[in-house]
Image (cartoon, rainbow, N blue to C red; front, side, top):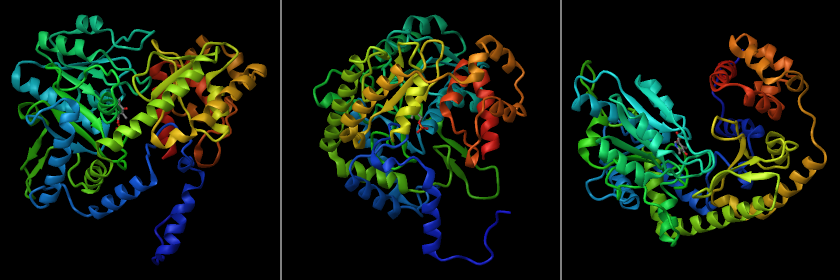
Length: 483
Ligand SMILES: *Cc1c(COP(=O)(O)O)cnc(C)c1O
């Protein structure tokens, strides 16, 4: 049985074990992974990590006890606001990640509506179908409604007329992405701003992934549509620093046009005998480390450093897009606005999931996206600065792998071949977590060490034919077993 050792062990032994635990992790250090990890130079990483460690014990629970943390937060929000079109009225906070930023924006919108319309009982937010799942999580946690509005299947941009038609008495917040994570495509934020003003609604712009990229792209002279507070209808913006800000994970921001809006984000409680709680964010006790790292990165990179990183990423993205245009069996999805992109298969002999598996076999890591009603199954790439030198060899491997798969189509998983999709759906109608094991057996998925399936291609093919609800049930059951 696993337990804490009776006698403490020495540091060297402990650190060696920790390192060994990483043995099967994605080898991200090689720069060949196009998701999860955002890095620029090793020097920048060292600066961020030293700053991070220098603020580890300080507690953001009470900024009056640690004015240094208050100062860091004010500095970060103050330096970020003008990049996002804001003036000195902008108020905001640092959070643990994009999900927390979005939960807070939705909470603030709900409590703003409660204060403004005391009789309103039902609350709903309207999001593009490409919006990040954290909006569903926010609606779920905050017990409010959420409606997904279609994007144009060609451009993957929100159909603003459809969002307009969906507005009801329940609506408290409109959402647009700048850009969406899945395809790197920006929604028409200017049109959304007009709509929000016309209907007197709040508008949140999810710039989690674009907020530290698009402003620099614009500074480099590229045409970037407005998406920030320069649009009068935009009331809040989420912007992650742990993506293209190159800050270690645990750092995002949520900004509001003014403090009248931000006040609805703050929670205070003095109904217990302990210290009075006044929390602007979800976390209560929290380390100052991510903020110290963020501030340090802003100073280390400077506008110029971020511009250079963006210029390299944009060139890398252009090279991948040019390669995709030369591959008739692949199709770029929409017109990505930054260095995030997705591509699908145009040829039924080419399974996009097999392509992902083969690329990953060759030492890359590309992310698979399952099909949804308006978006095909795809391979996603998030190209950050440390990926840039590897783009030529990635393109070569992509070309080679597509040619291999086209000349030698891999056989479809037997079970999937035997079952037609409607039968599978029927099978899944009464999904029970107990079926998970059987399911894996049926699929011939050897459950490798650590409970992770060996053949991801087969798993993805299976998940791809299920409905969103069925996928959620299967994956929830899987996670409940895993941890
Ligand atoms: C990453 C991302 C999020 C969620 O951020 P986390 O930091 O993973 O919680 C939300 N929206 C977009 C567009 C993102 O790219």
